[in-house]
Image (cartoon, rainbow, N blue to C red; front, side, top):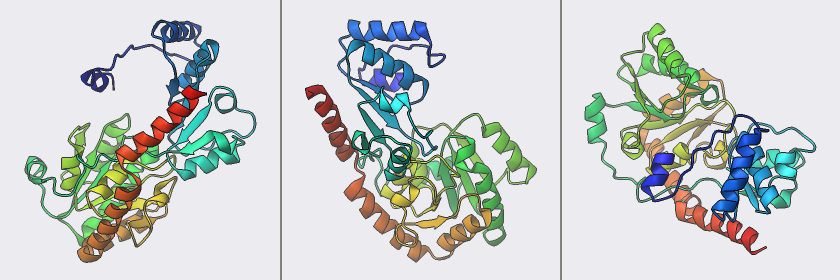
Length: 317
């Protein structure tokens, strides 16, 4: 993130934040806000929401807090949301509902999923380079996700093993990195799927990788908002199969814009993948409707406009 920010000419200042009550980090943040004349603080996770929120309160600055995942929030009084945030942005309506049920005042919460850059993620991005790099032929299943437990990589491996009985030439692309990747790679070897499963690692050419997929699949088990990789695949007219968890059903309507299955059900996931591969015409029709949906509701420009409205409303106040 720091490298990307610097490429855009945005100043970056690394600051270690070891705990919610890291006094040295709090003092440093207060000094930074005053020295750089910061007008607004935007936090995204747990520790930074405590420290950034307290530093903003000590300096009289407004605070925006983003909630990206659908992990339940403790009911009752929660200072991060009640005291240390003026506005809360959620990555979809499902996350917003969780916060409301936890007692957060609805007027403070704005559903604002990440938008798609349609100049980058568009139909027509050529897959030839990626297909040649990984020696891919039809059919290619793929997933773009960080390697953590909630992303369901092991469930997808189980489903893929079933799909291979009907489509023995199928390949599976795992795009991304993370702490659980070595474990998933070991399981793929144990199940004798090593030659059929490709681990690309972290990649910045995600659009090219998506273009090489015949079906995009997200097997998340929990803690999802509206996943960015999912709407990117939909923007590129890649047929999608996903689990009905978190905010995914907000964009994937079963049978219309994709196929939905229950989380943690590899057999149902395999059936949906086989249905997509076995009836490509129906899959393409769903992909067309998916592209239309995200083009109308999930553009990056629209998301940035809405974010700017939130920022300006707090700064003017």
